[in-house]
Amino acid sequence: MKLSKKLFVLALSFSLFLSSCAKSNLVHSVNQNQLFTLNYGNFEDELNLFDLASTGKINTFMDMRDGFFYIANGEAKKILELNSYGDLLSLYYNEDFVKNVEFADKNQQNSTKKAVAYPFNTLGPVTVDSRKYIYAVDTLPVERQETDLSNRVLLSNVVLRFDSNGNFIDYLGQQGPGGTPFPFVKEIYTTKNNELVVVCITNDGTATYWFNTNGFLLYTILVSKDTVPKLVREEETEAPEYLSIENIVPDASSYKLYIKVDYYTASLDPALKVQSGIDYEKTLLYPLDVTTGRYEDALEIPAYEYSVTENLTKEIYSLPYNFMGVTENGWFFFIIPDEEGFLVQMVQPDGQNMVKRALNVDHSKILYYQLTLSGNGIISGLFVKNEKAEIGWWRLDSLLAAFLNS
Figure 1 (cartoon, rainbow, N blue to C red):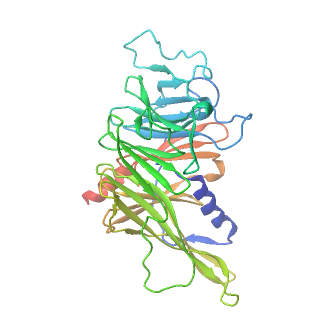
Figure 2: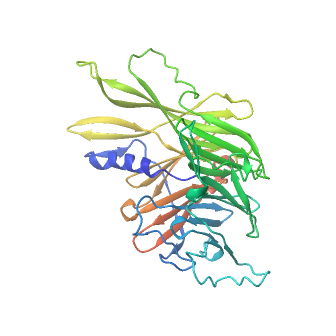
Figure 3: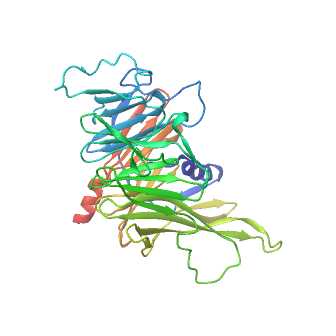
């Protein structure tokens, strides 16, 4: 699961412009283990993140599984597989952009290092299953893209599949192998059963496609503001109500989606009787059974709160956490950036137990970052800085294991 930069800007701007800000509760910090660094450049084991000839966001994504890191470097049109020491094990690359690949001998079939040529176009999110199959989002060339006129959406993304030996299997579209391209793919996931889940953004909400291990479509799930449950309030209000579907994440073992919904109400000026702003109200996490299409009872997720003292007046502000994902043992992970780094909130499915930990990071030195959550509860980070990119992790899996055994 990756953290939204938009949420970071929102939360950090709140804390910077206010004169005095303090967390409502002191939480313990978890030390980051910095594992390795990557240089910037055009060599096979370097990242190319800064193309001065183009504009827009950085298209570099990361996933971690079983101690191995998979980085889809969209700017360089390549995917790197590295171990926790930073050794390059496999390289999937576009021959027109990556030249003179020498780290792997293509003529030695028994070599532990792989160099696989593939004509990547514009890489997106990447994930890996337990078989070491690699799945990567790519954008089709313009002449192969389609338009869904009825839904007013461009269909341009596909998911590429490579087996554990580096062989290209096929690409998946909406119906499965070779299918119609997806609308914009926000994220892809693999489950404990090695099934693929593709979450797409549409004009009406989200469309989630669930595939079996062979890539054949099992379920298509449409979620919009009109289909998620409305907030039940104790008292009626005349103020306009709003909701935001912040993230959708699949369960690791069962056919469920977890849908995080943030609810807001408009604040009204009592004198003028006009809307003066929007106030955050609460966050609910809904399990959705994809086999029946039914929503189960929601779990309320506590908000991030901080106090502000200004002109001898103290006020409490609330912000919703960002939903990172769910571990294989059922812990829900939520995260939000703050002045010291990130605050992680881990919640059990029944909501009875909740653990908070601080991840200390100096935001002033970071130009771009990606965070990802593994199935066993390790948060890994790719931090792009001025001179190098740093890769590290926080072993929250050990923390949860100790908590469950206590």
